[in-house]
Amino acid sequence: MGAVKVKTLLKKPKLKVKERTSKKIVLSLGKHTKNEKVVIYRKTPGKKFKKIATVKGKSSYTDKKLKGNTEYSYRAKLKVKNGKETSTSRYSSVLETKTLLKMGLPAVSGRTKTYAYYTAVTARNSPQYRLLNSSECTTDPETGVRMVDGCYCVALGSYYGTTIGTKYRVTFSTGTSINVILCDQKANAHTDSNHQYAVNNNDILEFYVQGSAMPSSVRRGGDFGRYPKFAGSVVSIEKYV
Image 1 (cartoon, one colour):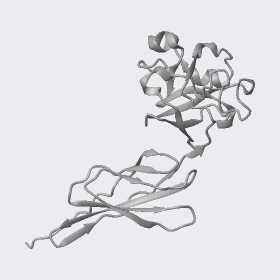
Image 2 (cartoon, helix red, strand yellow; image 1 turned 180 degrees about the vertical axis):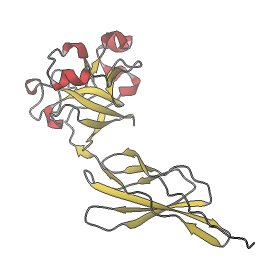
Image 3 (tube, helix red, strand yellow; image 1 turned 90 degrees about the vertical axis):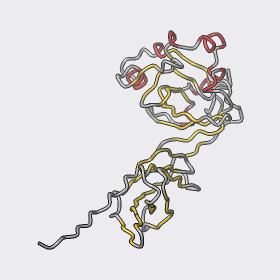
Image 4 (cartoon, helix red, strand yellow; image 1 turned 120 degrees about the vertical axis):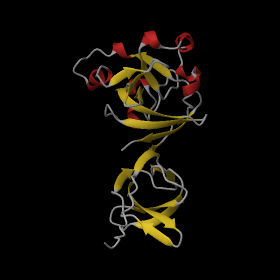
């Protein structure tokens, strides 16, 4: 009997969004050996895919200098060189994502970060109550702040939006970034003319907490800005859209 030579197909890359801001998208490419190259293609609505990068032996790629609040689509294929022969996979599934919307900041630093007890929200039919008391909402054991889907529950001024459940990425001057979710609204009567911060404490962020789980240092000082994770000025607020 004669021998039959069979060549198997390469596995297609699996693209996932690892991180996104208003200026960049970080793609997870999966694990690859040093001999494997991932060729990445990108397009915007109404345009054709164009090659933007070839990544060798790495598990992620950062696409920089993007436009905010813009849709981007990605696909990729794998190339492997064995001696003089190069094998190429089929294209991956198309990954669609969108950059964040960068929002304006007030003149105040936002270093002070106040808090409110989530149990003070008692209107059972309100979206605030439903979010803060849902099965998806839990208390972070480290900070005592209520969380949904990895986002800290906060109140913001109406400038940043009024839809409960809207998510944002907040970056501090320390370089730390956190994700937050709008669980309540700062009253317009308590905020500046642009409704970006509360005039009493010059605070932009107000965390919603379970009192018994709060760090003692925050409870004594009345300010989450004292907590290392939330320290520093607010230097960026970006909305997930």
